[in-house]
Image (tube, rainbow, N blue to C red; front, side, top):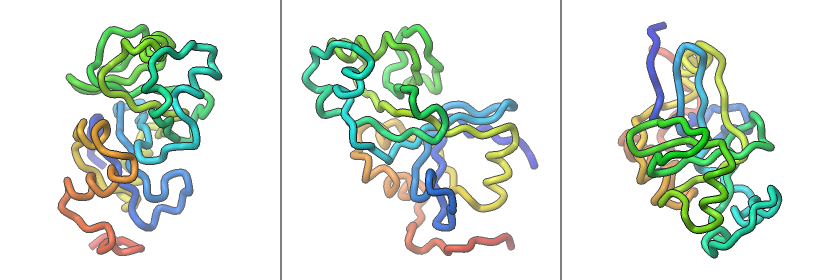
Length: 186
């Protein structure tokens, strides 16, 4: 199968997705190369706010907005580790620039800045991530596990979590309800 780079794309779980971690999810691919892929589920908030997470990692919270920012389930890998998807990219200790606008940071300095009200304009915080071994995502695509579409920052940062999946489907021009449960190859 020809290699495709899905960095800065959405993976939309097909209706037949059997893995409960990914059923009805929208996953943003942060990195995809010959070593595999890393993504974050962006439509599964958990029962935790950023303020509570910051408290758990002993970061004092001065910014009131932290109490209203939800933390998301980012995927089943390293669920005890935080990942911050943000716009703009900025200058943080450990950041992967995904696009000219969006970065993924895993260092504590970004959380400290957000806690003080000095962080990036737009953030999405997750616990855990989704990871694929080399060739695995291509195999899953060939098995019709996912639909793909180029990502848009507004879907991630400007819509509520429950609206993101449908918005990604709209980017494709496809009605999710019309998709067959068991897709096949022609």
